[in-house]
Length: 235
Image (cartoon, rainbow, N blue to C red; front, side, top):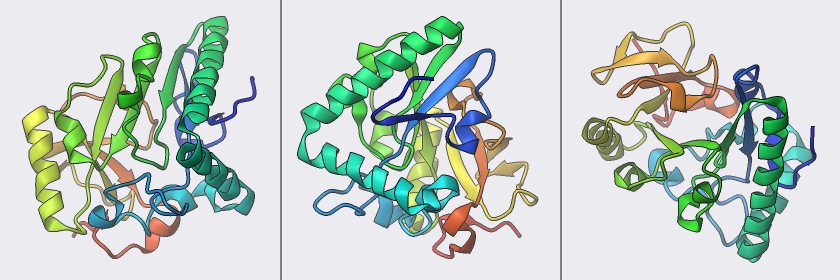
């Protein structure tokens, strides 16, 4: 496996579940929200109530050396956007070549712990053979025309009920799926907000999901203790 500057492959449990004979996923992790001074890579984090419950603390993200690496990447995005994008595109190009040699579909998730509109920088458009996908709390993105090779799943939270209403409406208006974090994987409803639920933790290949579904996830890391409304309790 090649070494990458910004992307990670086979280094987290979630995306690795989808790796196999058909797909391999590379993911980029930055320091979320306001972890780095003078930049916020998750503009909706406060409104959505996910800043404290962020998956930044889950899995390998709990280790200090991993967090420091993510901070360095985020500082590069803040301080030298051109160099960051150059390294990112170099990583994607290298990853795509690796997948071609293995005869598998390259998949890339650029916002592992961020919510940046990378489509504005022509990243997806530069690699039409790569499947890009992300989760987003930026409702405006659901209504935008996105590159054909980019799949976006809305991310739900009831920390702000006006925000929650807007997410449900955006899903209804656009047919996009809505990811919901439930307290326990043993208590996930068959339907939520009028949408059928599907298991979002069996793999991370969201572009394979049928449309207008709730992608059911369960709380991990600090999210297990969340009481803001980001994590949903089902009675």
